[in-house]
Image (cartoon, rainbow, N blue to C red; front, side):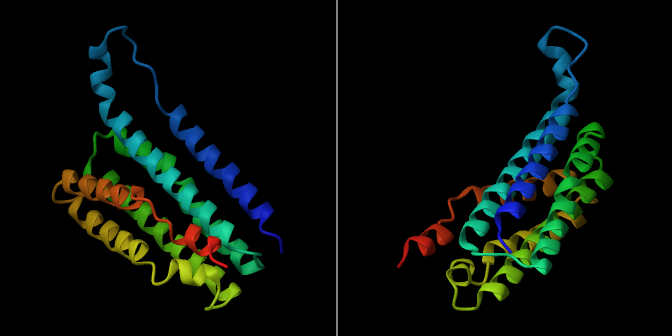
Length: 192
């Protein structure tokens, strides 16, 4: 199967996820900056989630650039990833509205954890489809960043019940890890 339709559908879903998240930002009822103070948690959770969705979109784009084709099981693995990412607006809004209460912060981490697992499954299924000696397999390798991210999410879930700030610091750490340019796939695609 051609990968174009899967890429287009995924792009559309992620665009909708971002749109839903921004629609959750409600304007304050006053005209001065003090009225924004109560919305700082909502704004911060939106920014964090926007960056996470952007990272997933970017990596998904690169993953599909390296793939030549997809299969039925790959389509289902992609839907699994999109399911978890589609929950991002809900957990983002809940975390912001409750000013980072432990349960919403933990559930936010659980959604990130499951999205990380789903992305890992998708990448492994694409590698299996293209072969262990494919450019995709060479580019992804052992996926240390992906595995580390999932482990950090699991740690953050538990820490949410100790101090939400530790959990959020871990979420930001994962963002920093992924914002560092990862040129593995681009390099593999350039090589003859």
